[in-house]
Length: 327
Image (tube, rainbow, N blue to C red; front, side, top):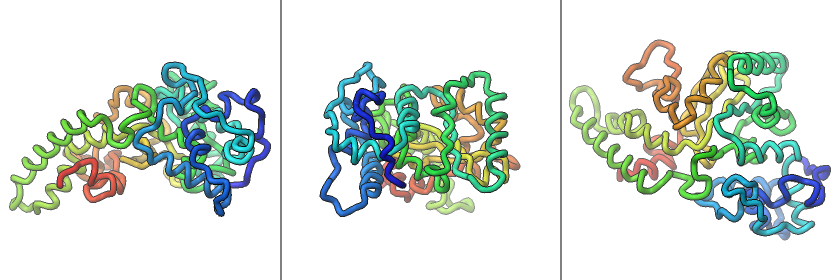
């Protein structure tokens, strides 16, 4: 991504001030001016490392998200602003990041990643339909809930996290600072115990045309107890208007953890996207047909709109092994 020197402004000219975001604190605290990496590459690597943090010091956050704190923990130098922070992302998207991090409640966030011929009209119609159906839509939210910028977002959806790590949330009412990966340890252990009991019950069916391994996998990945652990890991949701959406008129719905990793995903018609707002409150999406395991739901029906489990959240996935903790 080209360096964007037009972003360089004095501390008094930007709101919030430089260094107010936890991600900006991470950048200035870990930046190596002597690195042989290109600045853009070092910035990308650091933001990806930031997303992997299981805890974030609360004093790094001066956005006013919690306790209305606005004191910058470490004020960046002019050089850090000029060479690290200002070139990172356009002011427009920095302002959007503030809303995503500080203000988002149940708002849908749409990310456009398809810019091929004909996609402008399709995307415009998708948005018009969604706004017409959504009784709670507010026009002043459009600047930060509709992420449409070909120079930054064309292609792989996950590259948007390099510019807007705030997309990964978590949304308000969920702790953004501690136990970001797997959730509250006490609650986690309770859910794991229920999972162990569920697996033991499922294994009693061995020998009735089912192998022990498949019974275990299904119980963990698609059973109620295993899916409740997955619900517990979801920190935000994102609609992606990719090229498949243009072809099928169904947007990609991603349930994301606090690292921006897919827990589950599905496809949703633009006439139904607005329903995720209510489903997000209290994580009621756990009872939605969109969350049910598409291939292993007990109530599977033709054209089931259910979801597919993310690779890392499978039983043998990098995160699944830690989350389910069955060994």
